[in-house]
Image (cartoon, rainbow, N blue to C red):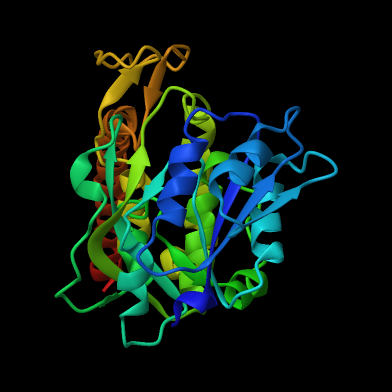
Length: 315
């Protein structure tokens, strides 16, 4: 892949707090690629003003005539892309300065490339200049998602035609729509993972996933029940049902101070990222499922024993 084959797309709406930093991380790449910003019909022109000030004519700005919703705006980014490959950069995240250079140096052909992120609240200095990778790519299959959504979104590149072929992002599964999208892509594309931290994933109280916990859990179960690989493989289905979103990240109050977790779903004052609370829930689910599994096995064994004994007695 050449730098000219890649588009960095930044979807924006209203919030401008971190936009300039995100845009600069795209502009400061050691290899130039296409950059677009897609404004979801914000009530102000601040994004355009910032682009005019620092964009150096390299950034294409689009403003939707109407609000398409978050998912609609992500899909519009894909549709407006004029290159073979695209990466979506959220307006509060950052790419390492060498991101484009590193991914373009990979000789292997691929449709989807996942990379690693530094996750935190404050931007560390070390994220900016990532070193060239020495490790080979690891193939990614559906099994890679059984024990959690390892992909943090920033730094993920995929072919535009592959995204269109699987139906783009869908709102079927609410706030885990990205997880659903990666599953669709991996199922139908040649996907690889580069264990290289090439982006910064910002945790902030302004993000949207500080609610909808019940919805996310229910939709996780629904996804795992809809993927043929998991439905037909009892082991994968059993383990995946309680491991998704259980990586145990820190919990932050809206003022960004750390706090203990409340296990009451009515508590929406906390912001949780990949999701400490879920771990506790799924530990309970695991215990419940294990007990039910053992009981069912015991009942089946006892029933089989009773039938065989009755047959033996008749003889």
